[in-house]
Image (cartoon, rainbow, N blue to C red; front, side):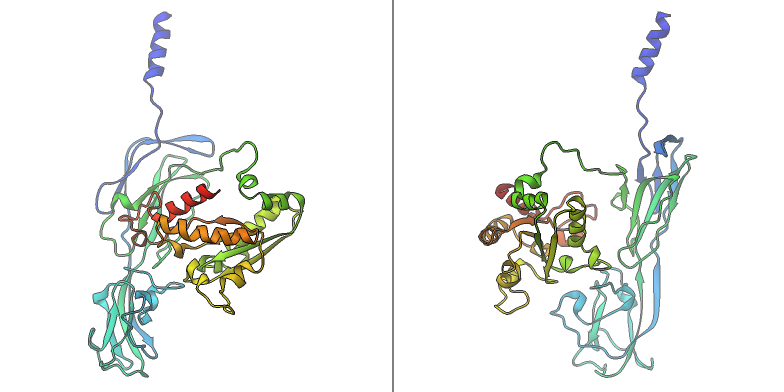
Length: 394
């Protein structure tokens, strides 16, 4: 009996918890999923042995005879996505999808197709951002149509899943030149990882794998009064007492609407709607002052009478709460944040306004100074500067 108990104790100590399956790249387009345990619908499901999966490469699209009724002059001094006409296959809502075009595939012809124009002589091409235009001394007439043929890549976001039988498979997402959506994962499946397949990728690396480490990130439970009661005492008092609260959202294109489908889905509208749900007795009034492609200094430099003059549009309405978002301020160093935002705080204090600053959303990794697409923490000095400023000044 004693021997049996001792053996059971030792076996229990030796037993190791079964880890979730791990995903690794093992070849150009192959990944391996290790054995492990997942939980689906309240039940443990075991992947009993390693599984190798093949990920489909990104696809290429061939465009023939895309017509432009006329071609603008190529402007080498403009932003790369604005140097001329945009090839439609890679055009996004505001710019073009960088690095999707295969530059050597571009052929520009006359509208009738009987003349092939020469790059660098008749037209200029921005190879990364797929914009092109005629050159002043070239042979392309200003008022005549041209036709273009080219090839471009499309990106995709796939999913690696496990079903209730422990079967591992790949769900392929729909390819897009930019912002592909992931495939839907069924209620009977557990999501192990997503696979980012950018257009024109030649082989997978571990940078393309995004394991799902947690199924959700719930807000931590708080005790006592929330931070808003301490940091925004006037706002908090108005919400609690049912007084009218005037909220002003101030920012750039994100605040102007960005990719929101309508005004109700802009971030500030969602914020106010959720606030109203939490405090149904407080009348909330939202004003938006936003200028796409600009930063906070742009408003300060606008003259009186301008629709973006800081004093008239931001201060004069005397908002109770200012919610500020400027991804275009992200060029600032922490020292610049301290200097410029201290000056803003002084002016907000003068009108009795309280202030919320949004940290900026992620942008292209190369614009953030990142060397990989796997950006785990925001590398921008501005973001660190904003967080430090907010902590110092409450």
